[in-house]
Amino acid sequence: MSDTREKILMTALRLFARDGYEAVSVSTIAGELGMTKGALYRHYKNKRDIFDSIVDRMIQIDARRARENDMPDEEYDAKPESYENTTLQSIQEYTLEQFRFWTEDEFASCFRKMLTLEQYRNEEMAELYSQCIVTGPVAYMEDLFRELMQKGVLKEKNPKQLAVEYYAPLFLLISMSDKTEEYDSYLAILSNYTEHFMKRYGMDSGEEMR
Image 1: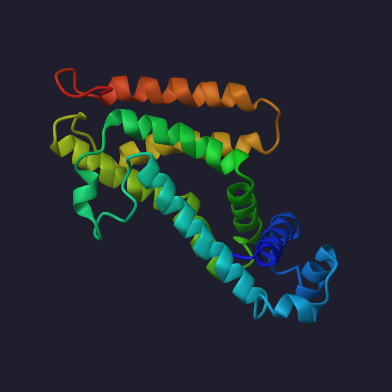
Image 2: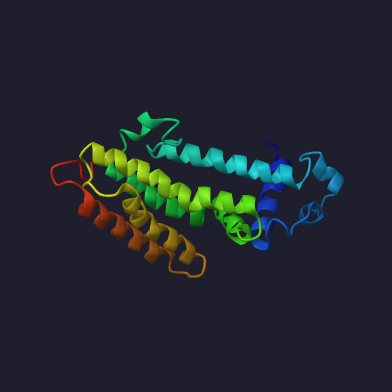
């Protein structure tokens, strides 16, 4: 991606995160960059083209990060074998990485804030918010936990209920981090929680933290 195209993408995302997608026009984006609308249109067809590029980038980043952390990078139905070798340790470590990613990474943080702003005004944004930040991660954890139960690594419980229980603190702490400077303490809370969760539900005779 060219430097100009990248600058347009990031500037638009920052504006979407601050003011909301619907409130930002191509003129606003161009003005923020000090360029004409015509110059912007040489890189993107319209505002929707910019938005689609943002979503595509987010999907690519998410898949790459999962692979880098030894986690499945696709939904269970598409690639069930990738869920078989996930460990409790990789889940715990990935959870902490997710907290850092959604709060520290500018692209991810702005993407999350954009969806949070627009979820009650735009049906498509609401669906994206759910897929990326709410029901999507819960379903992902449900599939992981179900596999770990079948392997005898986790105690037999309702996997969806367990997934909700596990994910809720991460979701809450990410939201709380936007309004406070207690970032390090929240990360410590999350680390302690995931450790306690794995010890509580891991099988004594199975794989606890390997």
